[in-house]
Amino acid sequence: MSSRGLFIVFEGGDASGKSTQARRVAEHHDAYFTFEPGDTPLGIELRRWVLDASTEMSPVTEALLMLSDRAHHVRTVIEPTLASGRSLVSDRYFASTLAYQGFGGGVDLERLRAATDLAIGTCRPDLTILIDLSLEVANERRVFDAKDRFESADFDFHQRVRDGYLALAASYGDAWCVVDGSRTEAEVAALIDERLAALPWSRA
Ligand code: TYD
Image (tube, rainbow, N blue to C red; front, top):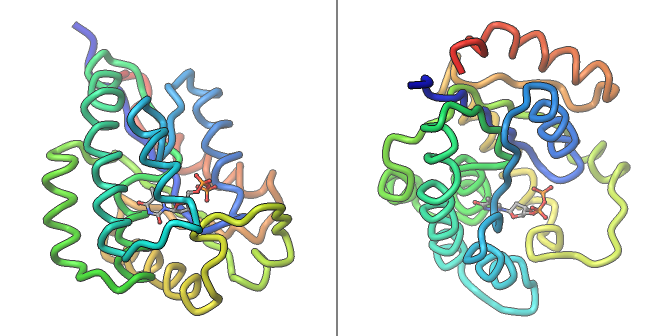
């Protein structure tokens, strides 16, 4: 029987470069690549509603849709993949809900944590990599044609999200690694690879 795969999560704000790095790491380690919200048939429907800026909803409603997507994602994709022995890289996971709906949207963090426990059970990442970027640099990099619900949110919201991520990183200690996203893509990749090299990939 193969042992459990490694579970790596990438977090960060818009234009942080996390999706590029997440895909690169997955390819390099032959890990399964996935993302939230929306990487299951049910998730595609939930994503469409939750990102659609023209459908008004409260941050609590957003959180519950994100958590529904996550509960289903864990049970149908993440957990079966890890249990089969294959490693998995996810572009966003539970910290996105704490950062965006909790710190950003003002949903009570303790209740969100309790709901997160219900959604994910014991399925926790081995490592979460936060690619941190100031909003000033993010705005310089950003090129949008159409804006989704969160891209259309104001500066203060995104500042709370960024600060929230940094507070989460501080509270989770070694389970998180913060990388300076203002560096070049190659430098960011090197910092990530250095941290990932310390993980027991061979157990997978
Ligand atoms: P997406 O198009 O997947 O792009 P990216 O991850 O590169 O930003 O956008 C998903 C959006 O949903 C993003 O703005 C963050 C937001 N989000 C939440 O607000 N809460 C969540 O729990 C998750 C998973 C995402």
